Image (tube, rainbow, N blue to C red; front, side):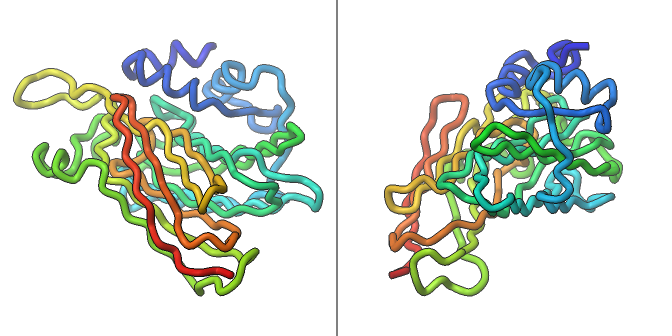
Length: 276
């Protein structure tokens, strides 16, 4: 069964297209299932996928308190001499299964990422890591649905005027001990004010669906160096948010640039202090 048939029956074709442009996935027999098999065939074809339990520590709540903002965390440690190309989060049963794809800058063996997703129903949730040499590793975990309205069709939080007034505002906060020298590990958390409209919400006044308007890319740069880029989807929560670690390079500023499907571009430069 092809993924497009599953997705389009649940969502607009535009949202389905966004899934594929974000692109990831792979499987082996150990991870087989009708939904996952369709996703895998559509995106990765016959590429082999290795058991990632030895290299990926994956944390997800078994029964999340809030299905509108479910935290997913991946701590990746590759063998010496390998480097991370991308880290992807996948939710099998969501209309847009590929939640986010993080392309990791630099030749890094280790990276830690946390992101927040909408969970539409009970689903297997996966992390796929691709190395720069082309190997694919995957881990998975079942996440239960806590009840209530399916999150992809739930109305956004806040009034339309409030959402419009805050559109594009960003925050970036350094976490943990501050790095005091170059080539040290520092962690940060980023959040963008954006409704990330799914295209599946019925306006109760107009009785029309609120048009799809999602964050499709976010780039984070430390000075001139790319820390990471994220390709998003409607599975990312309203006000997309993620935490990441990076290796300090002596730069005193971090610039984040976000683009959405309307063509809007939001950018801000944050001071991160000296690291020399």
